[in-house]
Picture 1 (cartoon, rainbow, N blue to C red):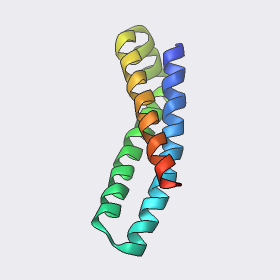
Picture 2: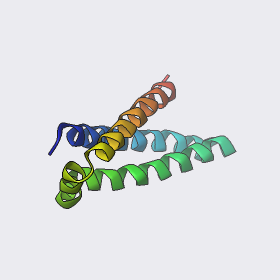
Picture 3: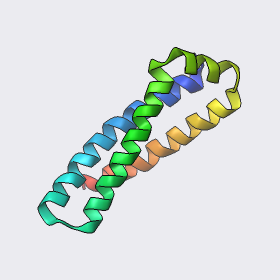
Picture 4: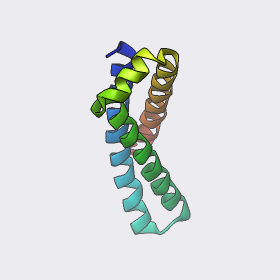
Length: 100
């Protein structure tokens, strides 16, 4: 497995953890305040969580996809890793603001 694939899998795993925490916070806020903003944030987290769980499956749990990305499409794999790392940065900012 390439280094970029390992980095993408690690970033995706951290994304899942952060999104579960954010979903808990935003879901609790929605139940307490019933604001449209909290509901939208909860739905955003839920959809992004689904995307990251699927990406984690592809990067870590399905060796066929990992092998294909590593051999047939290395540039696409690196680009996908870059997107996961950027997403991790964005989620770190959101998590930082949620716990402030």
